[in-house]
Length: 305
Image (cartoon, rainbow, N blue to C red):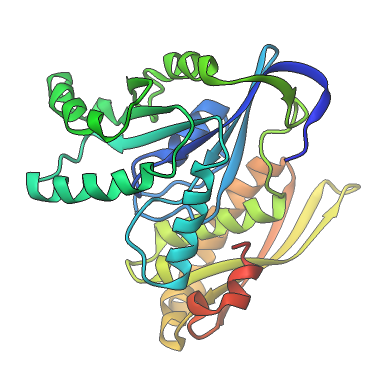
């Protein structure tokens, strides 16, 4: 990342890491104050690393939302974990986030702790343990949860929060500021993220696929924006995007009877895109089959991996 050398403030990078579906993207969106990362109830929604820029007059913190840490076999999942692991070694602070609403049986917990300790071998920056989703449990359940995770690493602090409600997030930012170095801003003050509008549009369409299709489709689908044409005089943008699937048999699940499912996906995506761009949007979606795309290294590069 290039630095803006004109000013010196508290400025640094913080990685949001942890298992899938613990609320990393929700926390990023809450802290930034707008939707940058897509959010669904399904694990492994986040595939790429996305930066959200927390801008204030006295500081700038670049928050890196990363894919969930998990055992991976397919090239796609291996790339996702690689992205997350790389984020651990190039930041000024690490926020390790867990979901306190999902206590693990003791045997599984021990296995997971060994897995997490392997991840922490890569960490050289100060790390905070973030106990997310405290709005879903009795606060008396927090102490055993803290005891279960506190010995993973020499955490600088342990913060119970609710990323959804914002409870505890102001204190989290205050603690995070203390870990950041002094330096120039990474981004102009009016820039909330490092990703392009085209990328965000593709992510919004993918989010609707996650939310509106069954268990199989989200993990075998990808979205690429083919064209993005803005007409400033008319205050509108026309977007063409392709939804890629791995099997011919999956097309019917996405298109639906008489195109009803694809229409629902497009309508829901268009609403969010218009809100993001503040422009009237014409969104045209095509469904295509690219066999075993998740194992195709060339196609994964097109997707930004």
